[in-house]
Length: 441
Image 1 (tube, helix red, strand yellow):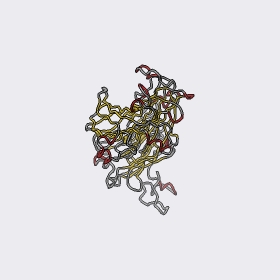
Image 2 (cartoon, one colour):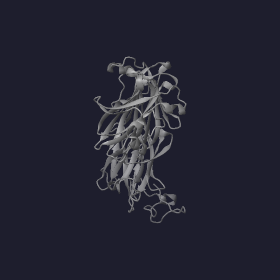
Image 3 (tube, helix red, strand yellow):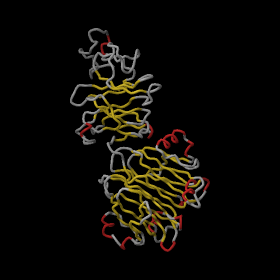
Image 4 (cartoon, helix red, strand yellow):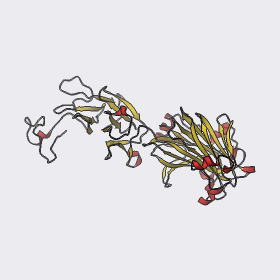
């Protein structure tokens, strides 16, 4: 590592200034293989250096002028008094599979209220191959996990606003603001053709956490025609059920009850025949069921909104089940992540054949899955979930391997924003399918 003045001259207090000649007087430290980056601890002159190892260890080194950190003679911890051992290290390769290359390296700036005060003075670093961010405590000499599920983190730095950001190669070079909290589901929707019997539209979700969650639920039909949807459901009815099938609330026309509350929440449907309700739910499983009044059929949209984002609870593991046709009658599961900064890991599944074991008479034989952003751009797609080995391994590690090889799955990290998961039948097959979105953060 070299140390020079901003004008290009060599500082006379460099450790080798008086013993070296020429440009070698600029050498400040030796024995570093690939010092990826370094950072100064705020309020001190102490420097932390991330050094990428060769075959055994990844290091965080105490940056002290004149030190020899051992490479290429050795790497990682050493008892040789001629070399300085790292203050923290983790392995890769045959000795340890924790990671492959330490990257990033920055201190939390308490002037930017980004994390709790317990992170003041802590050093954040990441690994190129393992998809995590960890936090090193200099006073204890230990590191703890902070975030996982990052698609190939390349760098970690303090931005111009003083906050921490990371660059994710897996997103084509996008930069994300680091967060102490993952993005969370704020809105869930499922659009499909509502039939009768098992062909109604069912959107399921789980409330997790310690506090009740206030949610808004809507069933739209007639107003979908304004968005070019042909054959909308003329008069939708909504039911909100608990996991055991018992009824929480139901609504036919939204103005019949809770009109003031629904309007105040900004959820008033544009058509009087559409349905809406607001309920406060404790932790557990729930389903919103959309059907047509008097057996009516047509394309409908079921929506669930988080109306209390500050509560110590969230919406998770969302799903929509419906009859899947062709054209505009495919199954579209929409969701919005937000309210927190930073990406969150998401797993999406499209099930069909395995639904038969739950009594579904006409399951979709071979579902295909697409995930798109708010602009309609394709983020990922999958036909048979085992066709991509790395994706299959990740899905399996989440405990979400689909029961049937013809079913589809995608694992991805998503920044806050709106997304749609689209389920179709291969070769225009039709049948009942299920789309599921899991927050794996």
